[in-house]
Image 1 (tube, rainbow, N blue to C red):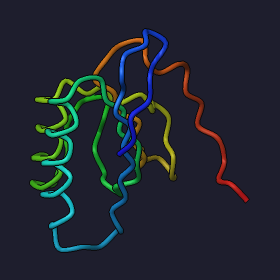
Image 2 (image 1 turned 30 degrees about the horizontal axis):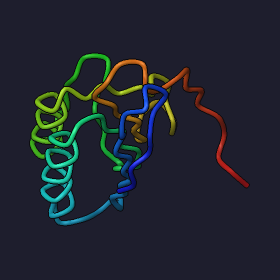
Image 3 (image 1 turned 45 degrees about the vertical axis):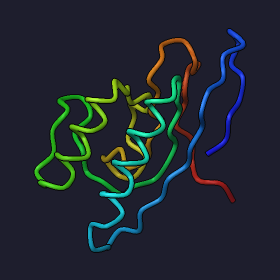
Image 4 (image 1 turned 90 degrees about the vertical axis):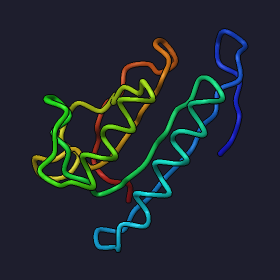
Length: 113
């Protein structure tokens, strides 16, 4: 995590997370705790690739672990700012923020390189 000052001169916590496509679920448990900790400290932006198949438009998932993580995101008042698919028809990447106006317009582009 890193702390930056936003345009309002407030400190904003920025974190980056990654979860490999196949893991034991330990990553989701640790990620939930880190999300709670970050959001308890004030404005936060969480960026990452968690390879989760969440239907962000309807705020649902068909997977219990993903539903638990989604509930944590909702409880932390985080909004997902990526609205377009990032891989095939799924939104696998995150740009989550718990304060309006910190992020600008986000555009999904092709991979680097």
